[in-house]
Length: 83
Image 1: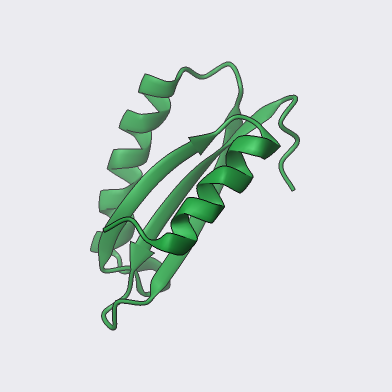
Image 2: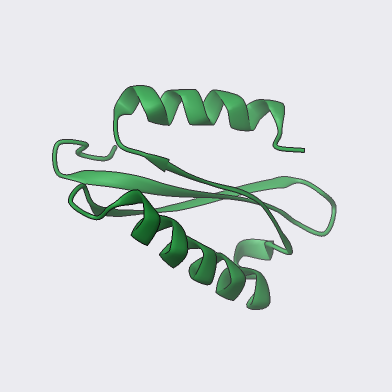
């Protein structure tokens, strides 16, 4: 689990060729602002799709969780889908 006192989680939600969901994430310091994280994530997501990393072919969403509560909320919303 992420140590939210120091880090935030940048979450990526993709779909594979069959439309099944794929979730990936990485951690970044809490000191990095949302705009920077979002712009960085957009670039990384394009690269992930281009490489079909873990079978990802389409980006469904990007989210930033700065607390465990936010993380749980994002994951609950992801279960319902982004489309």
